[in-house]
Figure 1 (cartoon, one colour):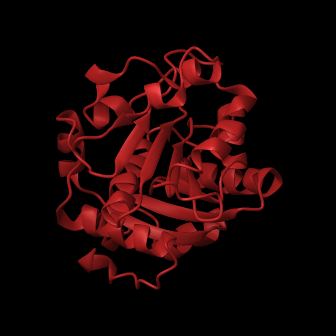
Figure 2 (cartoon, rainbow, N blue to C red):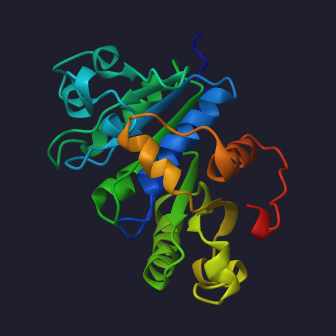
Length: 250
């Protein structure tokens, strides 16, 4: 059942600007990786602002969280909750208050590598210590970027900071892409966003209001255009060459 350090891969989702959809990307990629047959752990590292337990419908089952584990108040297995809506996916909830994680995250992930095939860390938004700590422990960093100018500019700064924090590969996930808006030049073209952020494109997620409705019910949506885009990203993270569809077919 254990995967071993040589097989487990750790991904961290980051964003410069809050509201880019980082937690949505984390949840959906966690579900997609689990659907590919990997024992997958989501770690909510957004201390003080945790939300993944609500989004995945396990908020009523949370007794302990990441802070309890790091402080030695419980065993890690007592805090990890299975996600009923996604077989093969588990969640380690974030602390309720800020300033609880610190440097203990890296050794904890080192231990968890023995139990899981894929670990996905949902970092706090912005470029504070939480962002730096989460990025430093990852094998690959996924920067979630919106199509608005503020998010794009912030993403460039995030990319520059990541170069100093970790040698891990950096991929941009362009989230909530609206082809109709792009075709009318209401948002920047994809090539312009890639140039502005200086990051390799890992995937484009089309805007889909059904995702938000699903999370309100605590049930991730596993159908539709956005879901298929997340599956493509998951396959790319596994090293498969998956071509990006034409933008109007996303």
